[in-house]
Image (tube, rainbow, N blue to C red; front, side, top):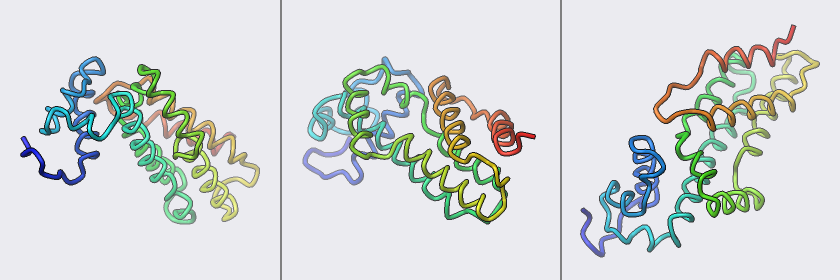
Length: 194
């Protein structure tokens, strides 16, 4: 355990990673502040020193992980014109699906945390809307380059892909492989509907 009074580098990341390990290994019922700090090898009360309670911690964990996903998607428009379109979309989609389903599920099982996440998204924190906007911008760029059909409704394709990712995350199991083949079929169907 870390000595008392010694600053821990990247404490938030350490606590968030510990929480993900607990969720994957033991499920949401095992997620307590004491379990998190024990898993992170930190002093028992440190979580409550940095967060007002477990609900705030869970909300911040969910927001942090969605920020990662939105950052992955935000890099997509710069890839327009390089690599196969389906491959670029698949890489972004699989990166988003690397979110732990247990973390995503927490936002549903803890009403106070869910409310805090919704409020943060309403205030502009990156979430599903940011991911959808990035995918749409990427598809618009590819359409302007002639790499996807001129009549493609890029907004609808982005919405369908994000909706599918949301569904897969909400119904996924921790540790299960991402449904790569299913996603590839979907992307092909959305981009080549003939």
